[in-house]
Length: 103
Image (cartoon, rainbow, N blue to C red; front, top):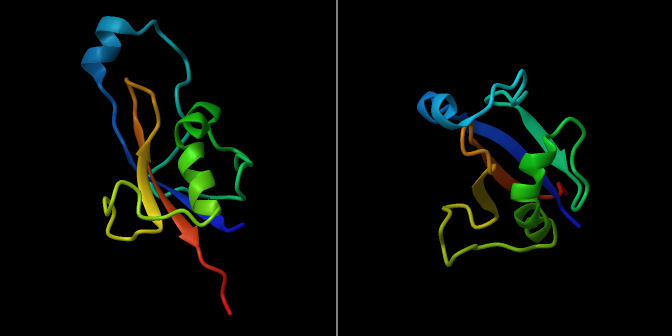
């Protein structure tokens, strides 16, 4: 099984939706743009958001098992995917990339 690098690419925040629909919360997300994690197949990386993992884990598993070319050429790198978490108020976009073994 291959490892998969998960990189935080973008973070959005929709203040208008938060103000209108969300109950106040003290902490929503600890991710930072540029932050990287390494996944070993099915195992959620330490410190990675559980909710975000639920959104991306199927793609991580597919890449870890050699999957590629999602949606017939969607990504320039066929061994990658750009997936967002399911937070409608503060979505985070993740770049998933298969880590090829050296040597």
